[in-house]
Length: 195
Length: 270
Image 1 (cartoon, rainbow over the protein chains, first blue to last red):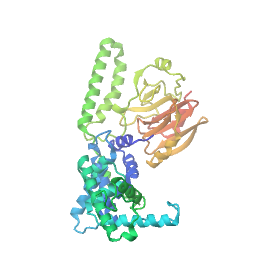
Image 2: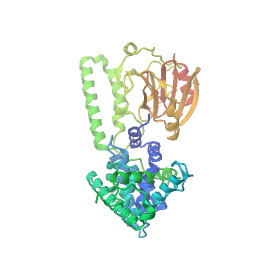
Image 3: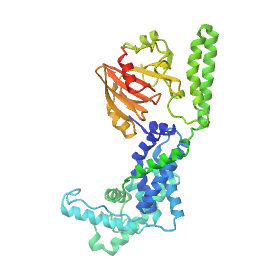
């Protein structure tokens, strides 16, 4: 069936509809990456649009057979950073849990559902306390399920650096959670403990 | 730290984060594709689409040119009687090379990507395939100017027609009509994707056989091959395309002709 290489090749020949098929395929990912960096939906939409246009103009330089996602992510990340540099006003990314379903949707009992929801809020609070670049690493890897290679494109660093940055971010997240649990031990002892 | 209460392993933390990720509110693109569509139209209005990569295309053109020259030289040496045929063949290839001159946009997958296999005769092609090769009898269309066999799909026979009365040549290729015949089923599942990409699709009947008429921006079609695999193949002329299937054989007619003429030519193939 229609694969990415066909679409890229057609787009490189100037077939706009093939490029638009790629836009449809990646628009959510691109918008979310832009959102993680800019922290603002309207800004992310502008970045995504301009990023896609830059990708279109960069098509002649796309090496045939190369994966599309890392290429696109690199362009979008650069565009988002440029956007942030150009605008004085900075939004801080606020990660939120989406409106929950009903108890039982992903837990066996209402108690488990409540516990899972509470657990998420605690983790989210610890994430919120992290530095922006730590949150970007964690959100890209675990919320957008980006591969290490894609993370490297997003962060503009080698893959080895992705690993170490991720490890450091997780360490700091863990530290934050532990502090939180020490302060509120009687009500937040819900993570598996090792001792 | 192993005895510290509340210590998580990386694995536990990662599991928690992945689980959390399923609940995080992230934006969804709404209207973005439409905005990009508008921007792209504006962009194209201001100039040609991205230019081809001249370095690589020039190299490829040089290779094609060298191969053409070598073949022509060889054939001319071997047979002076073949000159007329060779010049006709070179005309096709020559157009391909002209098409990728700098500054000219590359609107359709022809030329080096024409990839119709190797040139042959009707009799030789017929020996290599298990279905009867049918030719159009439409008016004065006459025999094809060139016949190819092979290409990306095995056993695909291509009939190439240059311009003739009522069948003008495509401006970019010099080819008026390209008819391909091969054993495969039409993969109608791909129609949804084509519609997505802006191709206009119309169901048609070719003397009782199911077919589709693609116009607008047809670039690919999909085929279910006898071994069960589904493959896509670019449409060579990127003009309007008529596809139909009779028995185990799929027919494809590409050219600059309109639907009525295409259907008449198709109906005359027997």
